[in-house]
Amino acid sequence: MEKQILIAGGGIGGLAAALACTRAGWPVQLLERAQEFGEVGAGIQLGPNVVRVLHSWGLAHELTQVAAFPEMLRVRSAASGEELGRLRLGERARTRYGAPYATIHRADMHKLLLGAVEQHADVQLHLGQWLESFVDTGAGVQVKVLDGPYLEGQALIGADGLWSTVRQQLLEDDRPRVTGHLAYRALIAQRDLPAYLRSQQVTVWVGPDLHVVQYPVRRGHWLNVVAIVHGQVAGDVDDWDHATHAADLQAAMGVTCNRLQDLVSAIANWRQWGLCDRPPMKGAYEQAQGRVALLGDAAHPMRPYMAQGAGMAIEDAACLQRMLALPDLLMGQRMQQYARERWKRNARVQARSIRNGEIFHAKGLVRWGRDRVMGLLGERILDVPWLYRG
Image (cartoon, rainbow, N blue to C red):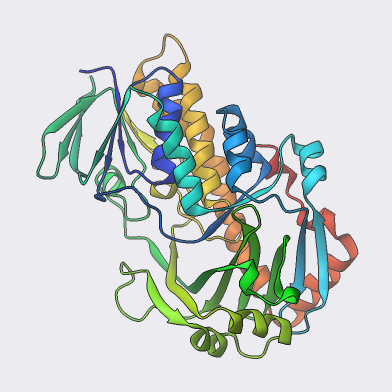
């Protein structure tokens, strides 16, 4: 069996895994079903816990060339527009957690990781090919490529996303669950917005059964906006990326303050898709079995209410790197130790993301209590030390 790691999936998680494996001294064969590399979606937020990993991989300079680094996170009422609470980021995050808080376009994050991976000659990227099935022989893993050859390696990492083929064969569990939440995402150049709508901060607008998040990307030149409302996908949930318009979102949002309505109206084109997730992980067996491990959304898809989906995938990869660098362990032992170290943290972030959604979308007395506590405690309620310390 060849001394190499096989990876299914070439998104952010798969590329992070490839970089981690090769940094630990393991050659990689990566399968990506798309004919060319690219990344859909809009922006992602990177907490200090994630930025620290990227810095440890020598990517600090590359990150500063494409990301934005907001100085503040503000929470506002979607109905009235008033500020409910704030969290200082910027220098406070650097001092407290050893790295800044960053916001970045998803495509830029993907390109950054791809560039780092391509610098390593021992990573082979196979485009237009995807895993059909695998066999864990005990001595290694054999992978059947759809309309392609068999590949062999010491381990298989399933980083193939929400609808993971690796997960389906490994765990034989149900399909991801539909959350009943719809996400509307858009990007707009800041220069195309009126001055009062431009922003270099993270702003979260919270309201009954909805919330909107906005933050800068691409060194602050663009604004990423995500609105999440309650509703069902029209059609197949697998076909998750739909074009839509501001009028559709405005109707879904109901009565909100003028500033938020102006922001939505200023953006002509939106993409809509239904959010899916899985229940919080119940044990290490959901992250790895034998020589086969899952990473990122394949293992622990989560709602975006902690902005940690990509972050947990990158943390997974960093942990995988540590396990692969350990001496005198069998590969199966490395994968099991990886799973033991990761599953509880991932489960905690999954559960907290669900809870955050309930708080963001609260009504009645819960909404009143949320606003009151946030005003009284401010940073103490908005900061997440257990998460950002890694």
